Image (cartoon, protein in one colour):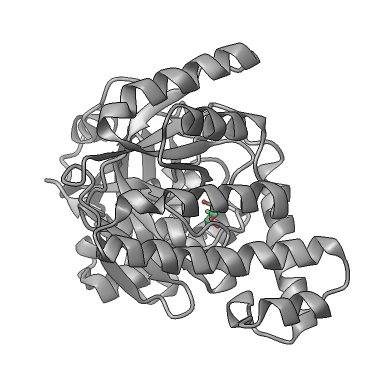
Length: 384
Ligand code: GAF
Protein backbone atom coordinates (compact mmCIF):
# COMPACT_ATOMS: atom_id res chain seq x y z
CA UNK A 1 0.00 0.00 0.00
CA UNK A 2 1.46 3.42 -0.93
CA UNK A 3 1.89 6.17 1.69
CA UNK A 4 -1.07 8.49 2.14
CA UNK A 5 -1.06 11.65 0.05
CA UNK A 6 -2.83 14.76 1.32
CA UNK A 7 -5.54 15.33 -1.32
CA UNK A 8 -5.70 19.04 -0.44
CA UNK A 9 -1.97 19.34 -1.14
CA UNK A 10 -2.45 17.40 -4.38
CA UNK A 11 -5.23 19.80 -5.43
CA UNK A 12 -3.00 22.79 -4.66
CA UNK A 13 -0.01 21.30 -6.43
CA UNK A 14 -1.80 20.11 -9.58
CA UNK A 15 -4.48 22.77 -10.00
CA UNK A 16 -3.15 25.68 -7.95
CA UNK A 17 -6.36 26.11 -5.92
CA UNK A 18 -7.43 25.71 -2.30
CA UNK A 19 -10.15 23.11 -1.65
CA UNK A 20 -13.60 24.17 -0.44
CA UNK A 21 -13.41 21.03 1.69
CA UNK A 22 -12.23 17.42 1.91
CA UNK A 23 -14.67 14.50 2.08
CA UNK A 24 -13.92 10.85 2.88
CA UNK A 25 -15.89 7.71 2.02
CA UNK A 26 -15.04 4.14 3.04
CA UNK A 27 -14.78 0.83 1.27
CA UNK A 28 -16.97 -1.93 2.66
CA UNK A 29 -16.92 -5.54 3.65
CA UNK A 30 -20.13 -7.54 3.54
CA UNK A 31 -20.84 -9.85 6.49
CA UNK A 32 -23.48 -11.82 4.63
CA UNK A 33 -26.01 -11.33 1.82
CA UNK A 34 -24.04 -11.77 -1.39
CA UNK A 35 -25.56 -11.28 -4.83
CA UNK A 36 -28.83 -10.39 -3.15
CA UNK A 37 -28.83 -6.63 -3.77
CA UNK A 38 -29.86 -6.82 -7.44
CA UNK A 39 -32.57 -9.29 -6.42
CA UNK A 40 -34.25 -6.69 -4.16
CA UNK A 41 -32.96 -8.76 -1.24
CA UNK A 42 -31.22 -8.12 2.08
CA UNK A 43 -27.53 -7.67 2.80
CA UNK A 44 -25.47 -6.81 5.88
CA UNK A 45 -22.32 -4.81 5.09
CA UNK A 46 -20.08 -2.77 7.37
CA UNK A 47 -17.85 0.13 6.36
CA UNK A 48 -14.09 -0.36 6.47
CA UNK A 49 -11.62 2.00 8.11
CA UNK A 50 -9.93 2.37 4.69
CA UNK A 51 -11.29 5.31 2.74
CA UNK A 52 -11.03 7.52 -0.31
CA UNK A 53 -10.59 11.22 0.40
CA UNK A 54 -11.59 13.85 -2.15
CA UNK A 55 -10.46 17.48 -1.98
CA UNK A 56 -12.92 19.50 -4.03
CA UNK A 57 -13.12 23.09 -5.22
CA UNK A 58 -16.05 24.64 -7.05
CA UNK A 59 -15.25 26.37 -10.33
CA UNK A 60 -17.01 29.28 -11.98
CA UNK A 61 -17.36 27.46 -15.31
CA UNK A 62 -18.49 23.96 -16.36
CA UNK A 63 -15.05 22.34 -16.51
CA UNK A 64 -14.41 19.19 -14.45
CA UNK A 65 -10.76 18.47 -13.66
CA UNK A 66 -9.78 15.25 -11.90
CA UNK A 67 -6.52 13.97 -10.51
CA UNK A 68 -5.80 10.93 -8.35
CA UNK A 69 -2.74 10.02 -6.30
CA UNK A 70 -3.26 6.41 -7.43
CA UNK A 71 -3.78 7.02 -11.16
CA UNK A 72 -1.25 8.07 -13.72
CA UNK A 73 -3.70 9.93 -15.93
CA UNK A 74 -5.64 13.02 -14.87
CA UNK A 75 -8.87 13.83 -16.69
CA UNK A 76 -10.45 17.06 -17.90
CA UNK A 77 -13.80 17.55 -19.60
CA UNK A 78 -16.95 19.63 -19.62
CA UNK A 79 -19.74 18.72 -17.23
CA UNK A 80 -22.33 19.12 -19.99
CA UNK A 81 -20.48 16.65 -22.21
CA UNK A 82 -20.43 13.75 -19.72
CA UNK A 83 -22.52 10.87 -21.06
CA UNK A 84 -22.64 7.06 -20.95
CA UNK A 85 -19.85 5.71 -23.09
CA UNK A 86 -18.06 9.05 -23.15
CA UNK A 87 -15.64 8.66 -20.23
CA UNK A 88 -13.28 5.75 -19.64
CA UNK A 89 -11.12 4.42 -16.81
CA UNK A 90 -11.17 5.71 -13.26
CA UNK A 91 -12.55 9.11 -14.27
CA UNK A 92 -15.85 7.48 -15.30
CA UNK A 93 -16.67 6.82 -11.64
CA UNK A 94 -16.24 10.50 -10.74
CA UNK A 95 -17.60 12.13 -13.88
CA UNK A 96 -20.48 9.64 -13.75
CA UNK A 97 -21.46 10.87 -10.29
CA UNK A 98 -21.57 14.48 -11.47
CA UNK A 99 -23.65 13.37 -14.48
CA UNK A 100 -26.05 11.35 -12.33
CA UNK A 101 -26.50 14.11 -9.74
CA UNK A 102 -27.31 16.56 -12.52
CA UNK A 103 -29.78 13.98 -13.79
CA UNK A 104 -31.46 14.14 -10.36
CA UNK A 105 -31.80 17.91 -10.86
CA UNK A 106 -28.76 19.09 -8.88
CA UNK A 107 -27.43 22.48 -9.86
CA UNK A 108 -23.81 21.39 -10.36
CA UNK A 109 -21.22 23.25 -12.41
CA UNK A 110 -17.50 22.62 -12.78
CA UNK A 111 -15.27 21.21 -10.05
CA UNK A 112 -11.60 20.59 -9.42
CA UNK A 113 -11.17 17.25 -7.64
CA UNK A 114 -8.07 15.55 -6.19
CA UNK A 115 -8.40 12.11 -4.60
CA UNK A 116 -6.26 9.78 -2.56
CA UNK A 117 -7.34 6.33 -1.38
CA UNK A 118 -6.12 3.55 0.87
CA UNK A 119 -8.93 1.18 -0.14
CA UNK A 120 -7.18 -1.69 -1.92
CA UNK A 121 -8.13 -1.73 -5.60
CA UNK A 122 -9.31 -5.02 -7.14
CA UNK A 123 -9.71 -6.61 -3.70
CA UNK A 124 -13.52 -6.74 -3.76
CA UNK A 125 -13.65 -4.08 -1.04
CA UNK A 126 -15.49 -1.45 -3.09
CA UNK A 127 -12.78 1.00 -3.95
CA UNK A 128 -15.00 2.24 -6.77
CA UNK A 129 -17.92 2.93 -4.42
CA UNK A 130 -15.58 4.76 -2.05
CA UNK A 131 -14.44 6.96 -4.93
CA UNK A 132 -17.98 7.64 -6.13
CA UNK A 133 -19.34 8.32 -2.66
CA UNK A 134 -16.55 10.69 -1.55
CA UNK A 135 -17.23 12.85 -4.60
CA UNK A 136 -21.02 12.50 -4.30
CA UNK A 137 -21.02 13.75 -0.72
CA UNK A 138 -18.68 16.61 -1.65
CA UNK A 139 -20.77 17.65 -4.64
CA UNK A 140 -23.99 17.37 -2.64
CA UNK A 141 -22.74 19.57 0.18
CA UNK A 142 -21.34 22.13 -2.23
CA UNK A 143 -24.64 22.19 -4.15
CA UNK A 144 -26.72 22.46 -0.97
CA UNK A 145 -28.39 19.05 -1.38
CA UNK A 146 -29.63 17.23 1.73
CA UNK A 147 -27.11 14.82 3.24
CA UNK A 148 -29.25 13.29 5.98
CA UNK A 149 -29.93 9.55 5.62
CA UNK A 150 -32.70 10.16 3.08
CA UNK A 151 -30.40 12.46 1.11
CA UNK A 152 -27.65 9.85 1.27
CA UNK A 153 -30.01 7.22 -0.12
CA UNK A 154 -30.52 9.52 -3.12
CA UNK A 155 -26.76 10.03 -3.42
CA UNK A 156 -26.27 6.26 -3.33
CA UNK A 157 -28.80 5.91 -6.16
CA UNK A 158 -26.85 8.48 -8.19
CA UNK A 159 -23.61 6.60 -7.56
CA UNK A 160 -25.21 3.34 -8.74
CA UNK A 161 -26.36 5.06 -11.97
CA UNK A 162 -22.84 6.40 -12.44
CA UNK A 163 -21.39 2.93 -12.04
CA UNK A 164 -24.00 1.17 -14.21
CA UNK A 165 -24.38 3.69 -16.98
CA UNK A 166 -21.15 5.69 -17.22
CA UNK A 167 -18.56 3.23 -15.86
CA UNK A 168 -20.50 0.32 -17.41
CA UNK A 169 -20.39 -2.08 -14.42
CA UNK A 170 -23.82 -3.75 -13.91
CA UNK A 171 -23.56 -3.87 -10.10
CA UNK A 172 -26.32 -3.61 -7.49
CA UNK A 173 -26.54 -0.95 -4.77
CA UNK A 174 -25.02 -2.52 -1.68
CA UNK A 175 -21.58 -0.96 -1.88
CA UNK A 176 -22.72 2.64 -2.32
CA UNK A 177 -25.33 2.32 0.46
CA UNK A 178 -22.66 0.93 2.78
CA UNK A 179 -20.17 3.67 1.96
CA UNK A 180 -22.70 6.46 2.53
CA UNK A 181 -25.03 5.07 5.23
CA UNK A 182 -22.99 2.85 7.61
CA UNK A 183 -22.33 3.74 11.24
CA UNK A 184 -19.30 2.88 13.36
CA UNK A 185 -19.69 -0.28 15.45
CA UNK A 186 -22.80 -1.28 13.50
CA UNK A 187 -23.63 -3.44 10.52
CA UNK A 188 -26.06 -2.00 8.01
CA UNK A 189 -29.07 -4.21 7.41
CA UNK A 190 -30.05 -2.95 3.98
CA UNK A 191 -33.35 -3.88 2.39
CA UNK A 192 -32.74 -3.43 -1.31
CA UNK A 193 -36.46 -3.68 -2.10
CA UNK A 194 -37.25 -0.28 -0.62
CA UNK A 195 -33.83 1.07 0.39
CA UNK A 196 -34.70 1.02 4.11
CA UNK A 197 -31.93 0.36 6.63
CA UNK A 198 -31.52 -0.82 10.20
CA UNK A 199 -28.26 -0.13 12.04
CA UNK A 200 -27.54 -3.37 13.89
CA UNK A 201 -25.03 -3.02 16.77
CA UNK A 202 -21.75 -4.83 16.12
CA UNK A 203 -19.14 -3.92 18.70
CA UNK A 204 -16.62 -6.61 17.82
CA UNK A 205 -13.95 -5.47 20.28
CA UNK A 206 -16.38 -5.58 23.19
CA UNK A 207 -17.35 -9.13 22.16
CA UNK A 208 -13.69 -10.19 22.03
CA UNK A 209 -14.02 -10.79 18.30
CA UNK A 210 -12.00 -9.74 15.26
CA UNK A 211 -13.16 -9.68 11.67
CA UNK A 212 -10.25 -10.53 9.41
CA UNK A 213 -10.30 -9.57 5.76
CA UNK A 214 -8.11 -11.77 3.60
CA UNK A 215 -7.30 -10.07 0.30
CA UNK A 216 -6.39 -13.08 -1.81
CA UNK A 217 -4.77 -10.88 -4.46
CA UNK A 218 -6.34 -13.23 -7.00
CA UNK A 219 -7.12 -11.26 -10.12
CA UNK A 220 -10.82 -10.91 -10.81
CA UNK A 221 -11.29 -13.49 -13.52
CA UNK A 222 -13.92 -12.64 -16.12
CA UNK A 223 -15.55 -10.63 -13.42
CA UNK A 224 -17.60 -8.35 -15.60
CA UNK A 225 -19.03 -11.04 -17.85
CA UNK A 226 -19.60 -13.52 -15.03
CA UNK A 227 -21.26 -10.96 -12.76
CA UNK A 228 -23.57 -9.85 -15.56
CA UNK A 229 -24.32 -13.49 -16.39
CA UNK A 230 -25.41 -14.24 -12.80
CA UNK A 231 -27.58 -11.16 -12.77
CA UNK A 232 -29.18 -12.14 -16.07
CA UNK A 233 -29.83 -15.68 -14.77
CA UNK A 234 -31.65 -14.21 -11.76
CA UNK A 235 -33.80 -12.09 -14.06
CA UNK A 236 -34.58 -15.12 -16.23
CA UNK A 237 -35.57 -17.16 -13.19
CA UNK A 238 -37.79 -14.38 -11.86
CA UNK A 239 -39.49 -14.16 -15.26
CA UNK A 240 -40.13 -17.92 -15.33
CA UNK A 241 -41.56 -17.75 -11.82
CA UNK A 242 -43.69 -14.72 -12.66
CA UNK A 243 -42.26 -12.55 -9.88
CA UNK A 244 -40.79 -9.06 -10.11
CA UNK A 245 -37.63 -10.19 -8.30
CA UNK A 246 -36.31 -13.28 -6.51
CA UNK A 247 -37.09 -11.51 -3.22
CA UNK A 248 -40.72 -12.34 -3.89
CA UNK A 249 -40.06 -16.11 -3.80
CA UNK A 250 -41.47 -17.31 -0.49
CA UNK A 251 -41.86 -21.01 -1.18
CA UNK A 252 -38.44 -22.19 -2.31
CA UNK A 253 -39.41 -25.81 -2.92
CA UNK A 254 -42.38 -24.82 -5.06
CA UNK A 255 -40.18 -22.40 -7.02
CA UNK A 256 -37.50 -25.03 -7.60
CA UNK A 257 -40.18 -27.35 -8.95
CA UNK A 258 -41.20 -24.76 -11.55
CA UNK A 259 -37.74 -24.00 -12.91
CA UNK A 260 -36.38 -25.72 -15.99
CA UNK A 261 -32.82 -26.92 -15.47
CA UNK A 262 -30.36 -27.27 -12.67
CA UNK A 263 -28.52 -24.00 -13.39
CA UNK A 264 -31.48 -21.73 -12.69
CA UNK A 265 -32.52 -23.86 -9.72
CA UNK A 266 -29.14 -23.43 -8.07
CA UNK A 267 -29.10 -19.69 -8.70
CA UNK A 268 -32.51 -19.30 -7.08
CA UNK A 269 -31.61 -21.57 -4.17
CA UNK A 270 -28.56 -19.41 -3.44
CA UNK A 271 -30.43 -16.12 -3.52
CA UNK A 272 -33.39 -17.29 -1.44
CA UNK A 273 -31.33 -19.10 1.19
CA UNK A 274 -28.83 -16.22 1.37
CA UNK A 275 -31.60 -13.73 2.15
CA UNK A 276 -32.65 -16.08 4.96
CA UNK A 277 -29.08 -16.15 6.28
CA UNK A 278 -29.01 -12.34 6.40
CA UNK A 279 -32.14 -12.38 8.58
CA UNK A 280 -30.59 -15.02 10.84
CA UNK A 281 -27.24 -13.25 11.24
CA UNK A 282 -28.99 -9.92 11.92
CA UNK A 283 -31.08 -11.63 14.63
CA UNK A 284 -27.92 -13.01 16.26
CA UNK A 285 -26.27 -9.58 16.21
CA UNK A 286 -29.35 -7.97 17.76
CA UNK A 287 -29.19 -10.60 20.50
CA UNK A 288 -25.49 -9.80 21.13
CA UNK A 289 -24.54 -13.24 19.81
CA UNK A 290 -22.14 -12.35 16.97
CA UNK A 291 -19.86 -15.25 17.94
CA UNK A 292 -22.67 -17.67 17.00
CA UNK A 293 -22.87 -16.40 13.41
CA UNK A 294 -19.99 -18.57 12.22
CA UNK A 295 -21.99 -21.50 10.78
CA UNK A 296 -24.18 -19.09 8.80
CA UNK A 297 -21.07 -17.51 7.25
CA UNK A 298 -19.80 -20.99 6.36
CA UNK A 299 -23.14 -21.88 4.79
CA UNK A 300 -23.05 -18.66 2.77
CA UNK A 301 -19.64 -19.59 1.39
CA UNK A 302 -20.77 -23.09 0.47
CA UNK A 303 -23.79 -21.67 -1.33
CA UNK A 304 -21.70 -19.12 -3.25
CA UNK A 305 -19.16 -21.79 -4.15
CA UNK A 306 -21.45 -24.67 -5.05
CA UNK A 307 -24.74 -23.12 -6.14
CA UNK A 308 -23.87 -19.62 -7.36
CA UNK A 309 -20.40 -20.63 -8.57
CA UNK A 310 -18.62 -17.33 -7.93
CA UNK A 311 -15.76 -18.56 -5.73
CA UNK A 312 -12.27 -19.56 -6.87
CA UNK A 313 -9.41 -21.71 -5.49
CA UNK A 314 -7.78 -18.81 -3.62
CA UNK A 315 -11.04 -17.88 -1.85
CA UNK A 316 -11.77 -21.52 -1.00
CA UNK A 317 -8.24 -21.94 0.35
CA UNK A 318 -8.54 -18.80 2.50
CA UNK A 319 -11.85 -20.02 3.94
CA UNK A 320 -10.79 -23.58 4.66
CA UNK A 321 -7.41 -22.56 6.14
CA UNK A 322 -9.10 -19.99 8.39
CA UNK A 323 -11.65 -22.53 9.62
CA UNK A 324 -8.99 -25.20 10.23
CA UNK A 325 -7.05 -22.67 12.32
CA UNK A 326 -10.04 -22.02 14.57
CA UNK A 327 -12.04 -19.26 12.86
CA UNK A 328 -15.67 -19.21 14.05
CA UNK A 329 -16.84 -18.75 10.47
CA UNK A 330 -15.45 -17.69 7.11
CA UNK A 331 -16.71 -16.85 3.65
CA UNK A 332 -15.87 -15.04 0.47
CA UNK A 333 -17.16 -11.46 0.46
CA UNK A 334 -18.17 -9.20 -2.41
CA UNK A 335 -18.74 -10.25 -5.99
CA UNK A 336 -16.27 -13.15 -6.00
CA UNK A 337 -14.03 -14.61 -8.76
CA UNK A 338 -11.07 -13.37 -6.69
CA UNK A 339 -11.04 -10.51 -4.23
CA UNK A 340 -11.40 -11.05 -0.50
CA UNK A 341 -12.66 -13.48 2.11
CA UNK A 342 -13.64 -12.69 5.70
CA UNK A 343 -13.01 -14.74 8.81
CA UNK A 344 -14.74 -14.12 12.14
CA UNK A 345 -12.28 -15.07 14.87
CA UNK A 346 -11.84 -14.77 18.62
CA UNK A 347 -9.38 -11.89 18.95
CA UNK A 348 -6.77 -14.09 20.60
CA UNK A 349 -6.80 -16.36 17.52
CA UNK A 350 -6.41 -13.59 14.92
CA UNK A 351 -2.65 -13.87 14.49
CA UNK A 352 -2.74 -17.67 14.29
CA UNK A 353 -5.52 -17.64 11.70
CA UNK A 354 -3.67 -15.06 9.60
CA UNK A 355 -0.49 -17.12 9.76
CA UNK A 356 -2.35 -20.32 8.82
CA UNK A 357 -3.91 -18.63 5.77
CA UNK A 358 -0.52 -17.31 4.64
CA UNK A 359 1.02 -20.77 5.06
CA UNK A 360 -1.81 -22.42 3.09
CA UNK A 361 -1.34 -19.92 0.26
CA UNK A 362 2.39 -20.59 0.17
CA UNK A 363 1.76 -24.37 0.06
CA UNK A 364 -0.66 -23.91 -2.84
CA UNK A 365 1.76 -21.71 -4.77
CA UNK A 366 -0.55 -18.65 -4.58
CA UNK A 367 0.75 -15.09 -4.21
CA UNK A 368 0.93 -14.01 -0.55
CA UNK A 369 -2.44 -12.68 0.65
CA UNK A 370 -2.85 -9.43 2.62
CA UNK A 371 -4.60 -9.92 5.95
CA UNK A 372 -6.38 -6.83 7.29
CA UNK A 373 -8.63 -6.14 10.26
CA UNK A 374 -12.06 -4.71 9.59
CA UNK A 375 -13.46 -2.67 12.46
CA UNK A 376 -16.99 -1.55 11.51
CA UNK A 377 -16.48 2.14 10.72
CA UNK A 378 -18.53 5.23 9.92
CA UNK A 379 -19.85 6.06 6.48
CA UNK A 380 -18.84 9.04 4.37
CA UNK A 381 -18.06 12.30 6.20
CA UNK A 382 -16.57 15.73 5.62
CA UNK A 383 -13.11 15.73 7.14
CA UNK A 384 -12.02 19.32 6.42
C1 GAF B 1 -20.27 -6.41 -6.00
C2 GAF B 1 -21.39 -5.49 -6.45
F1 GAF B 1 -20.90 -4.24 -6.70
C3 GAF B 1 -22.49 -5.40 -5.41
O1 GAF B 1 -23.55 -4.63 -5.92
C4 GAF B 1 -22.97 -6.79 -4.99
O2 GAF B 1 -23.80 -7.35 -5.97
C5 GAF B 1 -21.79 -7.70 -4.67
O3 GAF B 1 -20.81 -7.70 -5.71
C6 GAF B 1 -22.23 -9.12 -4.44
O4 GAF B 1 -23.01 -9.20 -3.30
O5 GAF B 1 -19.65 -5.87 -4.87
